[in-house]
Every structure is written in C-alpha cells, then in structure tokens.
Image 1: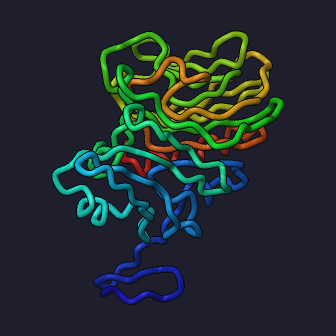
Image 2: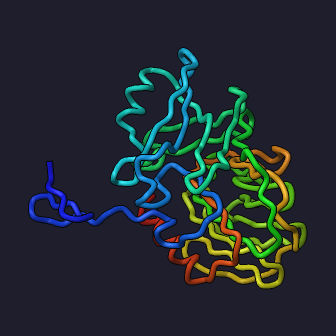
Length: 271
C-alpha cells in the first residue's frame, strides 16, 4: 500500500494528486447529484442507490479516494443482473433525486463512458429521477450537467429541468436552454459526452458548452418546482441519454467559473 503524507499519496516515488471535485472548483451549490464525489470532503458518503433486477434487492454505494464510485462493490452486487438507479443522493444537502417506480428507473451502466459509469435514460421506457423538494429561486441561477445523447436524434431530449426551465438536446448536434422565453441553442456534437454549464439570467444569460462561453437571452422564469433528472418538467420530454452528474447554484456563476467547471468535468470524464 502506498504511504500517505498529509493529503497526498506517494507511489513508487511519485506524488498522486488528491481528488478535486466540481464543488472544490466552484463551491456553494445548493444541490448536486452525480456519479462521482462532489468534493474531496464528500468522498465515502452515500452517493447512489441501485436495484438489481434479479431479486429486486436495493443497496447504497459510496465513492472511493479517487472520487469514483466503488465499482468493485457494485460489480459484486450486480452479478449477472441488470442495475437500475433508485436514488441519487444530494451530496450538498437532503434534496435527493429518486424514482420509486421500477419501470421508470434509469439503467446503471458500468464502464458506460470509458471506465466511468453512467446513468442511462431511455426515452421509450424510463422517466428519470425527481428531487424530493422543490427549489424556489428567481433568476439568476446556474445549472451544470454532464450528458451524452445515445440514440438517433429525437426532438427535445431533456436531461435536467423543472416546470419553468430546461436543459435539453434540441436538434442533431445542438443543446439548448430555455426559461419560458427565447431558447439559447449551441452546437454540441451528437453521440458525444458534453459538459454544459448555463447561467439563467434573462438578457445576460450565459451558456458554456465544452469550455466555450456564449452569451444570450433566455426567458425570465424562476425555479419553482421539483427538479427532474433525465426528463423535463412534469416528467415530459424524457431523454435518450447517458448522464454523469449535475447541480444547481442559486447565483450567476461567472464565465471563468463555468470554464473551471468544464475543465474539471472533462478531466474526470476524459473528453
């Protein structure tokens, strides 16, 4: 076992950098759900609850020092069964994302993107997860997400949203944000993983796709309902997508902060 000095592990004489999560880069999220640790301080906490379809048993799983899910324990639990996501724990507070109806649960895929696991939503069969509580916030607010559309283009594959605003794959090779007014539509290659960080702020809105900032206009809708992960408000417009994680900041992050989030996301996910 490599010795540990302070917070840095040494192996074969080489320093291994400690884990840095999105919340270490840009703190202050009001909720964050994902298949990695939000910060170095949340490593080891319950992150996801999975159900195996062979016997309907459910189990919680945590993250390792690397920030990744404990896939060794997940693999043992899985056996020859298929796994489905029952809950993503809010790693900031208590506003967990859940789906009690088995038929609507997204599938959990080991090594779904390289060696990283993903939550796979299928438009025809799964309706994603729903937060326990509504989030009420007038603009500005910021949403962050890592997502990949997996099927042939179908109009409006929503990967996170509430009744008043949404993030979604709009047309082939594009993503969009909407808050009750004009859409902001940005190029994003289909069937590829993307980081999308968006500031909903009326005429001063900002959308960062894969590290590039674009300013524009969205509607003025407030957040006022439960959040949906893998679908839109009222469980409409479900996604054909692999999801890695996302969160909400109740403030307008700067362009530099959005770039920093992208850099952290792309380094972890490998795109």
